[in-house]
Image (cartoon, rainbow, N blue to C red; front, side, top):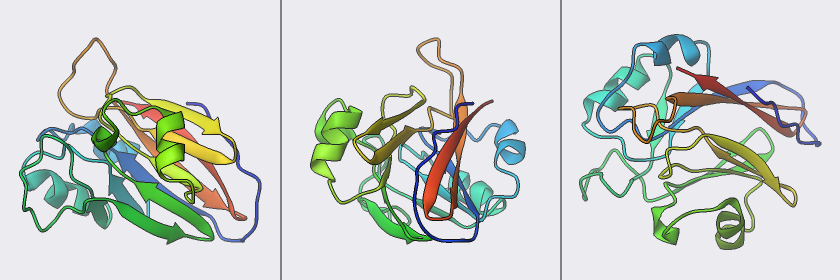
Length: 167
C-alpha cells in the first residue's frame, strides 16, 4: 500500500477502483477492497460478462479489452480516455505494446496524467516524468506466485494518489 501523491489543482475527493486480469474470477475480497468507490475501471482480461455484472453491484464499471477477451464484445472498449476531476486518465490493457512498461506507456500516451494498465499481473505504482502509471495487479486466478490485488485511485485538489490493496 504505497500512496504516490501528485501535485495539482481542483477540490473534491473522488475514489476510483482499479482492477485488472480477473480472467472470469471475481474474488469475494474485491467487494470489501473496493467498497465505497464511485466508479470501477477494469484494465482488461475480464473473462465472462458475469465479472462486470458483479463489479457493477459495487459501483458503475467501465472496462477495456485484454488480449484474452472475446473480440466484438460491446461491453468492452479498446481504450478509455476520461477526465476524472481535472485529471486525464487513460486505461488500457497494455498488450498492444507487447510487454508494457511504464516508459513505453508514457511514450505511447503522452497526454495522459494517469495511466492504468494490466497484462503483466504485477501490481506497480510509479512515476515517469509527471505521469502516474499504475498496474493494479491481477485480481483473478493466482499465477506466477504473485499475490492477487486491486487498487484505489484517489483524486483530490487536482492531484492523484494510488493505494494497492492485496486480496
